[in-house]
Image 1 (cartoon, rainbow, N blue to C red):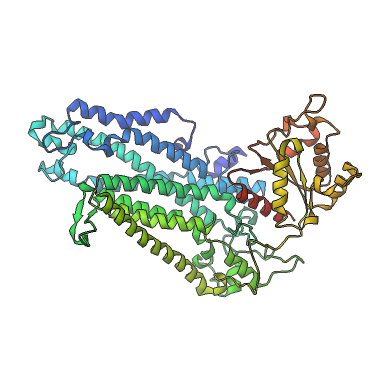
Image 2 (image 1 turned 120 degrees about the vertical axis):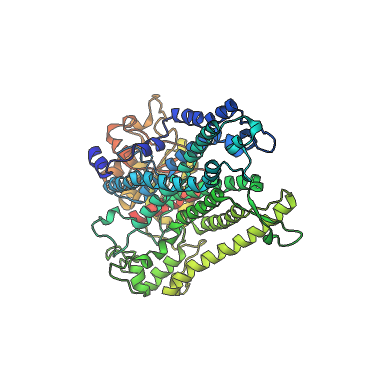
Length: 604
């Protein structure tokens, strides 16, 4: 399998594998040395301090701080990619890329992982990144190239052209060496930044392209596609299970934007002031960025567009290739693009749902895979930060800065509103039922959701996870009928035999939840041995019975527990260790319960 998957990646980039490998700690020391070398060189040639009206290397923190920022940026790059695309190993790792979790079939996961890895580790990513960074560096260094070619002083008076100042006693060659090494560090930092944007694009493009569309590439097995789930409790088409991939991109974008704003504001006096934007005696004039800074803002805006790609899932039928059969812009044909003939939503009687009901459920799902509230915050901050990156105020007055930032916030709010209105307008162009909730067609209410006919059994060890069992039981009552949830305390009356009642209940349910806490496999009996190895242990009996009946089992980890290894379990229960577990985190309790409910719904 390893050779087969590796072959499918088509000679992955060794440099990319190295950059993504979080175990290569020596790299941080290496990049620190690279970033610190211009500092050492500036001291050796005497270009570190201010000489007359020329700033020294130490007078510009955006340059000397790169010795610290370079390792930090490499660490951030690896952290972000580790959360989004951990694809260093040739086979599917234990920490899988989040979008892989959308795929339920194990064999299909392996195939999807190999394809995603192929996209991420392609040598094309390195080549394209190098091309863009070279263009950026040339544009940024253009004024310096002119200075060194003509030896004519300009307004750029700092360490970069200090050799022009006779009092500095620095020759042109030494100054050029310092310039080249300093810009090489900037080149490396820019390379990582642009590479991040390209990998974001690769990941999001693969996600969008792999969402099932009826008229898409039929050479790919349907099991290897991401299918939307319009019955998703979280109203995110079932994609919130991959929230870490999308939310990590948002965090990275916001952090980069905040860093750019600080850099632009602190060093804004180096830019060209635009006096005609001096609106009044209250508001300031603005700094238009230099070439490199302008490109930095432009690429950040491109990154925003790329990070926002998943918000266009609902519009996919409109992006069809012209070379393929066109989809008629009718409500039914639009919706059927998302479903194969066999997967069109069914009602509780097994009949096809009406187009009106499917459209209403479609409209109730979010544009953004992790919820429109997150998308709303993303677009608000993104538009706001783009404005302050592109045109920060030239004044260092706190009052002026605050007034400007508030004004930009109002503009960003308007742009955010227009963005969502635009998305809704495009869908409404097909049919307004894709956008507007129609209660007369399908009633959906968070407080009183329609209860499912699914039934399940909750298996837990009282000394290990009783409080969690009670909480889950109360949650499930909102979505399942009381008589369809079996929990021993609630359902076994006085005088009844546990084993008989449990076996009877297990025969009737659709699925079994096995709650596993930190001590689940370690709780000891009177003989001081783990109870799970005791043939008379009731939890062991419940799981063995469920396995023998062929019931679908959901191991659920609570309280920070880890899935027990097969060696920790008796031989009869080792099959349990092979089942993919779901973690209910205390920090994401409601969200994780939603994922559990979705899984139970699909198993019913």
